[in-house]
Length: 283
Image (cartoon, rainbow, N blue to C red; front, side, top):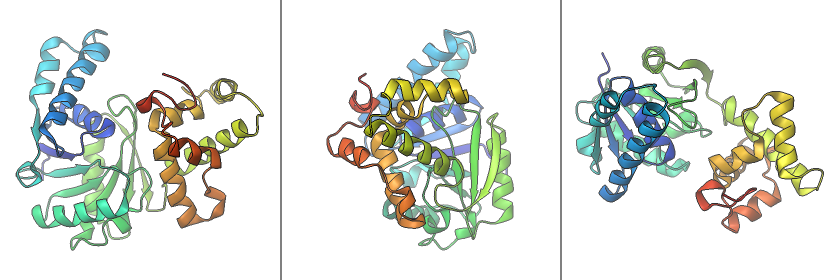
């Protein structure tokens, strides 16, 4: 099976970035969300990103940017969007019930040789697949934000994912000019489990007044050669996202993963980071 057409479900920050990335590498993309108005805004944002970060920096030409945009089709109808695709990538909110329902629906809609992939950053692939019949074709393809730039893809093999699907997904991921690591299913996988612990401990340090947010981030950037500090990263990803990840990891792995009380307070107060213009920093 040669992959030519891809469906991406969810046009948020990750979904739109994944669609842009895949279209950049020559694939046709059906981008799906619930609102035509939202989809048009997202495609306009992709156009701006291509101009600002790629055309203006002479990484691609205007003609190439137009071709990338033309490869992205917008659709509010999943049934239509998954026709004639070889892989579906889900990038909806990190909610187990939502993902289980979606994958069960996709399992019934799609031909049996279509790969069904989740971009989840923490939820068990095995559990996501539980309500689907053909669990062997469900896999995790975890992109990183911003998807067009970050070099890594974390490929997660569920307990029932077939070796054939893992190999096909790896080849597809590598065709996007990414480095691929393959991990067995576990809550948080490798990357999210480690970065959550760092971010949560940084929040605890900040809570106890050991250092300011800026000094914690500066220390991590210069000591560990990180591109951004843990509190900056939490604001970028979304403090609500890290809070939900923490709750899930605590439930699955134990109390040592309990989210910082401050993180919970910030989420309840709407201080979610960049998307609300205020978190550990103001934007």
